[in-house]
Amino acid sequence: MWCDCGKFQKVHIPCSHVLASCLHAHHNYQTYISPIYTLQQVAKIYERQFRELRHKDYWPTYIGPTMWPNPELKRNSKVRPKSSKIRTEIDIREQHNRVKNCSYCHTSSHTRKTCPNIGHEFSSRHH
Image (cartoon, rainbow, N blue to C red; front, side, top):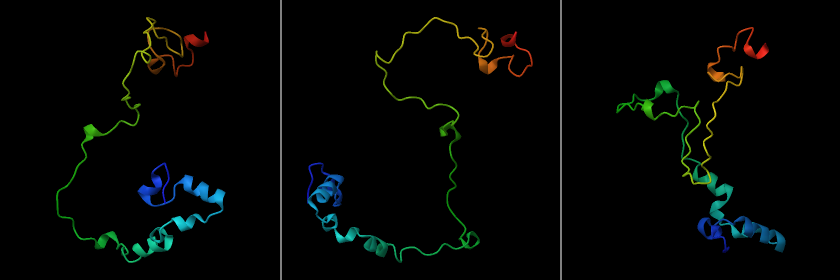
């Protein structure tokens, strides 16, 4: 009833190593599982635990504090999350002193996001 990985002792359910050993030795792995973990026993636990929920109109009126989310703590889903990795010398790249060009019209005064030529019929790219 043990395995070197330690998982078998913690949860009392055979780990993958025990299952593989049972398969190799032609043992029934179910003999190593306590009867309390069978599906029938788990179903018995929840048999009478929950009642059917009534329609919302029949719920009692809530009396208590009203909780409001703090909008400052909300994550912006449109922005890539900041990495919490501690950077080392290997991670830091040398900063190149080059000017970024617009990927649409290839000028250095702006980027594609603010390009005045996008959406116009004629642009410097097509000249």
